[in-house]
Image 1 (cartoon, one colour):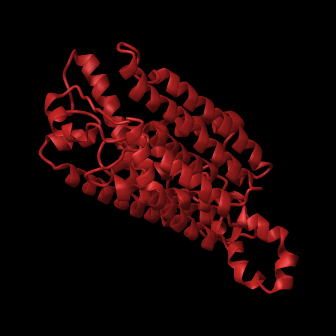
Image 2 (tube, rainbow, N blue to C red):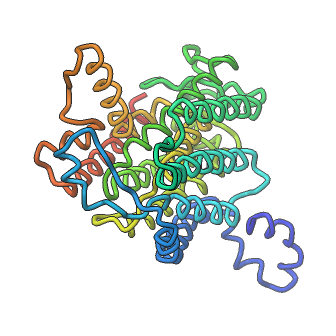
Length: 389
């Protein structure tokens, strides 16, 4: 909004001599990094008030697992308020509204993803934390298929809208594979490599839908320890902020042999707001946590990570950047499948896999810190892959 106001009031500001001081708002780099600071500050400013409000609503968590030892380890978390994701989402909405280009279609879709999944997650959290307590025997939260239906529906909408935004640009519809160049080096203009796969609309929509639904659930499953999900999302969003910086510029994209998607540079502000909000939330969510984000935060954060990657055509690089998230959801799939096939046998002590290590003797702080380290290593590996093409 500030960027749009600066454009509208250009002549008036220049006549008063204050225009030169505000020209930094034209620089996407400034707005993106300022988004990190602003979002972080909003969460810190509103954090204590939000936690007190959640406590007054008695929205405390009571984690229960199918493992007596794990229940014993996690009993200290009883009655810690959840639904703290409203703090993350609110900070991101305010930040993007102030610093983003509100005429940019990619920004519009990012806001839809954020609000849509926050509402779904918030409704699920509210049912879990209130309905079952007031009416014994009532179901706890949305059914898994109900949540998945909303996630898939959003994925289809995003896929179709992103496809429309690509227009006639083939580079905005490519399937970016590891070690593959998008452009022919040394050629004039943005000439695609002959081996590059350009997706049709059905494949494009399908891929977008799978990534948005899958990553949203993956981050949701990862959110099981103090600071785990918020720290990993912060790391991943900073990496995506850099990728959006490359993808949104034809010059930088061609230099890196990277798909150029016009308009996606503005998504740096979204990625920066997400990183700052998660960093601020970590202030209250680090061990011992004073608040949990719940589905209200984890679903939109995961969905936004996937949306950013799909918009800049880097879905498979997200598999590297967010490898810890996908490792977590894969451990659940493996555990459940093996349990059913063998009639009760398990691969891990408990899934998701962070609980496997917790039961194996690692303290919660060790699990979180080591998973953060893995998250940083994954980002470095993704950076290396950028040049190995």
